[in-house]
Image (tube, rainbow, N blue to C red; front, top):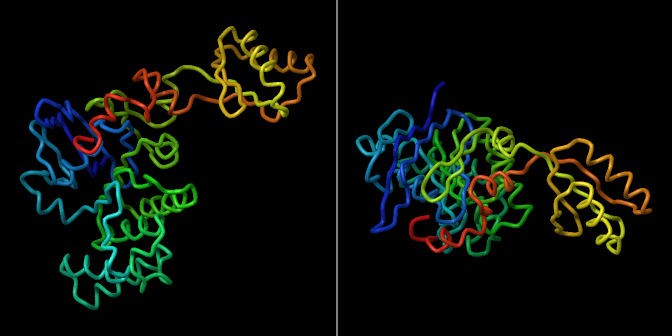
Length: 323
């Protein structure tokens, strides 16, 4: 198999804090590879090392076959990088931002203008091309930022939490753009703490926690690690919620969780669901939702680490410094 990115034993320390504690990665060419973990897990530090912005204290890495330290110049010619926050110049128009990047990359004026026009069209920003970026919505700025990272037609694209702060519609639009890039042969390394995002986009995922890769595989393989399913029941009338909790808990033999008027319980016995249906029918309870679900990535992360991806206090304290 051809790998666009390889990393072996990456270690990076910031004073007494170890941000990377021996990370190994192998990213197949032309795929989306997800680095999943909470703030402070080491995701951004890994990206900075691979993008030649930081040097690892130990280990080695290659991008496109080039060593990120010895061949840093060649690596930079192959990659694009979109950080956690849009880095466009807000005083310039959308077109001017892309023209600036093109000229910095050595494109002629004519080629820079042609490339800018093409990207504005691709990212549905043509109508806003002559407006200052400061007038753009958050989703538009994010699209412009991603467009800027593609001016040089990179073979490898690093997306570091690209949908942070975006509304659901803008997030879905960005997901579609990522899918189209991969369809054109671009390799994408995606860091995210959004479990749904990793599930939607990544063909393979490495779960990172406290600077280490603690699990790796396809979303389906990782979900299989929990070894179970969950039963979700949402009553049509919220008044029946306590009764549903009682019935589901009694049949499953486990105290269920309740969120958004939905009762959820892990099940390892296929007979639980029909038994719950019978008990609900006997109680005269009408349900709006009844589903037997496979494990979610959230449950996988909780199973692997003992905490959820978005609420690790120890890691969150490191955000912004060694994330």
